[in-house]
Structures are given as C-alpha cells and as structure tokens.
Image (cartoon, rainbow over all chains, first blue to last red; front, side, top):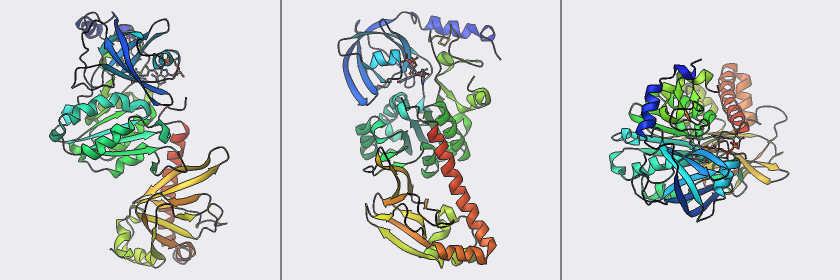
Length: 292
Length: 153
Ligand SMILES: Cc1cc2nc3c(=O)[nH]c(=O)nc-3n(C[C@H](O)[C@H](O)[C@H](O)COP(=O)(O)OP(=O)(O)OC[C@H]3O[C@@H](n4cnc5c(N)ncnc54)[C@H](O)[C@@H]3O)c2cc1C
Ligand code: FES
C-alpha cells in the first residue's frame, strides 16, 4: 500500500500554496433555504465580505457549522452566473444535520473551492450522458447548467437519474424544464413507488442500454454512491464508451481539503486535490481495493 | 402495423432465434392493448399468459401490509412480464397494471409449454431467455437491497 510519505507532496503543497489562504475560512450568510425533499435542503449563501466565489462545476467547499464541525459539500449552483453560493445538503449526521437546519441569517464558514471539475466542455461536438443517483444530482447540476448555457455546441444529451422513491426526486421542476425546453432526454427511475406512481421503477443502470448515444464520441459524467458508479461504469464500458471518457466523482472523509492531511487518501490519490472528479481509466485499477 | 412475425425478431427477448422458431412461437401469440390503469392480472389469478411489451409501461405491484399497493418494477418497450406461466401452480405472484396506454404481444402459456415439450431445442432457447430476465431482476433486487442511492437514512 502507498503510504502518505510516498505521496508526492510537492504537488499537494504547491496546490495548497496556490490556493492562497485555503485553510482560512470565510464567513457566509444564509440568505435563503429550500426544503428539496424530506431530508435534503438547498442553502443559498452570500459572502459577508461581498467577494463572490468563482468555481468550476464539480468542485466542493469545506462548509463549517460553528460549534458542530466542517464537512465537504459540492457546489450545486450555476458556474456561469456570478451570484449566491449554492449547496444542496442531505442530512445524514451531526454536521450535515446542523447545515440543513441553518435558518436565513445564520453565519457559516466556507473554505475553497477545492478539487477537480467535471470539464463538461470536453464533450462539445459530441454526446454527453449524465448518470446520477440520490443526492448525486446536486454535484452534477452545475455541469448540466454549464452545458445548457451552450446547448447548441453539444449533440445528444441525456440525464439518467435514479432515486429511492418519488418523494426523493431532487429538482423535479428543473428536470421537467430541461426535458421540455432544453432538448435533454431526461429519464427518471425509482426503486419503488406508491400505487399512484405512473413513472418507471427499476435501477438507473437499466436505463443505460435504452438511450441513444455514440459511444466513441460520448463523455459520461457519473455521480452517486460508489456501488452505483461502479455498476454504471461497467454498463457504459459494455456499450463501448472508453474508460477515459467516463468521469466519476469520488467521496472520502476529508479534513484539510488541500492535500496535506491524508484523510482522503485512496491508494496513491488524494481525493481532495486529485479528485473528486476522476476518470474511470484512473480509478478502474484501484477498484479491487476500492473500499480500502 | 407490423405483424407479430415481423415484430418478434426486433424484441430483445427473442434476439438470436431463427425464423422457424419465431414462427412456431408466433402461433401462440396475439396482439393486445391496455388502456391506462387497466389491470392485466391480479396476484393469485391463474397465470396463463406471457407478455412482451411493444409500447407503453406496465407496473408490477405487490401488496404491502404497511403501505398498500407498492410498485416494485415496471416493464416498458423491449421488456417482458411474467414467468409464472412456466412453473406450477401457474399463479401470478403480483398484480400488473398498465401505467399508460400499452401495446403488447400476449403468448398463451399452455401453448408455449406445449411447444417447449414437443421441441426441447425450442424449450431450451426459451428457458435461456427467461433465465436471463430472472437473473437481471435478481441482480437489480440485490442492488436495491444494498441501497444503490445511499438514501435510506
Ligand atoms: C467531495 C465531496 C462532495 C460532497 N458533496 C456533498 C453534497 O453536495 N451534498 C451532500 O449532502 N453531501 C455531500 N458530501 C457528503 C458529506 O460530506 C457527508 O454527508 C458529510 O461529511 C457527513 O457528515 P456528518 O457529520 O453530517 O455525518 P457523520 O456524523 O460524519 O456521519 C453520519 C452517517 O453518514 C455517513 N457518511 C459520512 N460521510 C459520508 C459520505 N461522504 N457519504 C455517505 N455517507 C457518509 C456515515 O457513515 C454515518 O453513517 C460530499 C462529500 C465529499 C467528499
Ligand atoms: S489530504 Fe487532507 S483532506 Fe485530502
């Protein structure tokens, strides 16, 4: 196993320095909150110092709830517009619980943005497939909005989205708008639904054989729990999409966010700086020991 | 509209079967249509039909003591519904209902079983395809059990 000492710290330290005062949190005020689902809330934040945060789709911040702690959360807002910082957070524990409970006016601390982006523009001139499950739609949303700002530069675009139940579907109004007005094939599936549910039931992976795209000329962006991403990557490879064209967003526990502490290590990778977005080409060899 | 013989080779379930076999199986088939909300069959009913979906969406539903009717799967164009016609006691284990206007090809279960028994090669080819569908559903059920979307909190 690669030890922390063996990791190339020069890159990581350079990254940390380039990030300037990346370890210094900036205060942000909660301006608006939106309850998206039973356990998920979107926060809109404004910087107290008035300087907006520039970010690339796919990047995350370290979001700090005072007195509780700090966690990595992807940015879910529109990277093509300067405005409020948006985060969509699912309540799974103490820090995320405090964040979803933050009322307008609450001051939170933000570090970042950190990490690699989706680089959806690499798909220009070809097809783009977004595949996501659960809260994974939130980190993909900025890439979708970036693509939509230049929709005509892409060919076929599809979004495959799986949720546990119809009540867990995020951004329902936007999904309809993207499908109806903006020329995206949006296919939604759930694990199970009530008697009244008229939509599809099944796994998101089962949608992959159903959509039309040119595998050799497709960029696939996949975001969700690892078991889902693995199943999707396998299905995409099965349709002939090159491993280098499949991008996954990895999650690991994080502390510093800038490649210094080693908390987010996955073999020779530090997910906070080498990721979170990585190609399947890079991740596949690590897959057998992925859970380590 | 295509005849059943013309359509069968296009359906993924029948991919790879030769023309004489398809003609043999088409002899057990009729075209059917269901309106939105129309029930195909109820749990416990005699299972005497096998459906392949041409267009639309069919919901597979089970009765849950706590939640009432729960849709646990759907079948759409290219999908199939039902294998209870294959093994005794030939009773449906779930309800099936059209979620939207749906066209399908319905095969008579007893007729299919007869063809399988009189021509084991046809029977084997059919069993392989049914086993594929069962395997896919089993894998999907397992993935759902481990909570694919990490959202059970
Ligand atoms: C790069 C990156 C981007 C992320 N983006 C988002 C986002 O946009 N929205 C969002 O809601 N969450 C996101 N997460 C996950 C988020 O960071 C965790 O949910 C959070 O750290 C949990 O902390 P907690 O104190 O609330 O829960 P804890 O008390 O630490 O844990 C509570 C439970 O949640 C589980 N858990 C902890 N961390 C994770 C995790 N990363 N993934 C799944 N389960 C976890 C634990 O196993 C435990 O069962 C992201 C994580 C990373 C690494
Ligand atoms: S090295 Fe500290 S979180 Fe990645």
